[in-house]
Image (cartoon, rainbow, N blue to C red; front, side):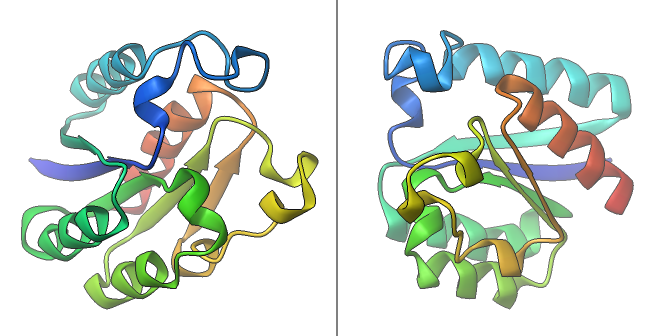
Length: 143
């Protein structure tokens, strides 16, 4: 069975109470439950992680090379400056889909560019929780 690594970046553990006017009221636990439900329907197994630490996410990406067939990632704020995440994603040579709850292109100018995106096969942004579900479907199709 195909294993997909799901990575949630900094502050996503605060979903549901952090700026609900931007990110909605859905919690990370609810997103993970929806992802697991969809994964069972489409025949993949998920390994889900959240970290507020760039280095920990890089370690997980490096480990994905032997543990997973693809990576679904919401790098959150790290999207805009983490060359380390970009380089790690390129190094593991796995299909990658980047997702964002909000439309990063419609927000502050510093959020409108992701340095992680060039390492991804595609980006889904602006659909709330559905961004993750669309991303999982797309990644599963790539695998």
